[in-house]
Length: 134
Length: 134
Image 1: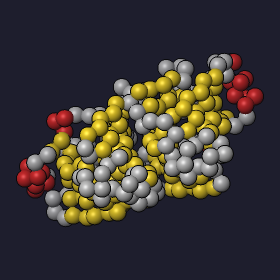
Image 2 (image 1 turned 60 degrees about the horizontal axis):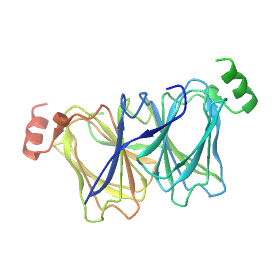
Image 3 (image 1 turned 90 degrees about the vertical axis):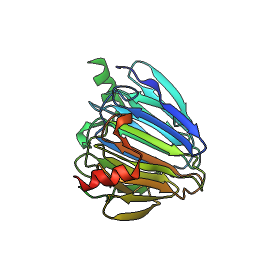
């Protein structure tokens, strides 16, 4: 769980619609203490573009699509999140950048702890230093 | 926290879109261990229509709108969920019924525990008996 990874969520569909779910200990490798949702992102906008020192996150695009680039200081991966059944787990010290939001997209992020401004790393050189010293 | 109640989430909006958030101890009166999302619900469909014995939930419509009816065995309330900044907290022994989904709606539910089939009450008369004996 130390590298960013794709996480498949369960999906059930019937005449009443589609339901996707995940739970702690299975699809969700931590107990979330915070959640946020993002929408109405212009197609040219960038979201994220920072890392967390200790917090981990699960990111899933519940409607529409966006591109998530994850960087752990050694390698980079890019995921097109275009299904509510496909999430990405970002462990601590993952630099996340979100771009190319399709119109009407809704992104959900579950985080392992409460909001703490000191937890954010917004300087990429500092991020690289921290990843090299872990 | 023993009655179903509206919960206001924080919303920040700027040129990069809208972000709504909630965290445990503030907007979220429990630590979620499970989440699910629902979409593509036909306008005539009904979702929910059951209660939980011990689990509590937070329900929020992240996109579009739907109507949530909550019943605690003594009184009923109906909420039109049409903003990602408006959630409803359903304590244990709340019968929840969701109807009138607008096209493109996305509902997020955070639950206080993992999935357990024995936790569901699907018989309304049994629900009433349980609410009267608490």
